[in-house]
Image (cartoon, rainbow, N blue to C red; front, side, top):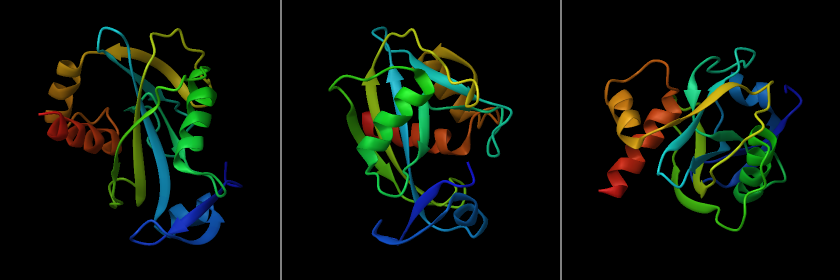
Length: 168
């Protein structure tokens, strides 16, 4: 994981350099990530509980799939890779870009491109990434986010608030 090479980007998301993941995080450099929201036909969202082995946000609930955009990748190819690696599915052509969040300290200085897909499962969860997963109604998620639930990652809470503000 520490051998992961990431793009370092400027405030406009233009590539400046390539650095190892641990250097990017240690120095608080801007970089890229993707988060994918997987909704089922009932409108529920699949959330993953991050593995306790993860170095960041271990044991917290997060988006359906997420990860860094590796050096040499674009946002979409990274999203497709993460969905397959973490959930064991190959999404169809319905991967929908929703919005991009700008970097903040709370979200690890990541530009976060958010996508949505529809899939009912089942999933094959990557055990090194995910301890468990579950389906949650948007109303239940909103209650937890509004209460600033510490079991949810800060990035997910920010992303969900943004999604709610654009869906109204």
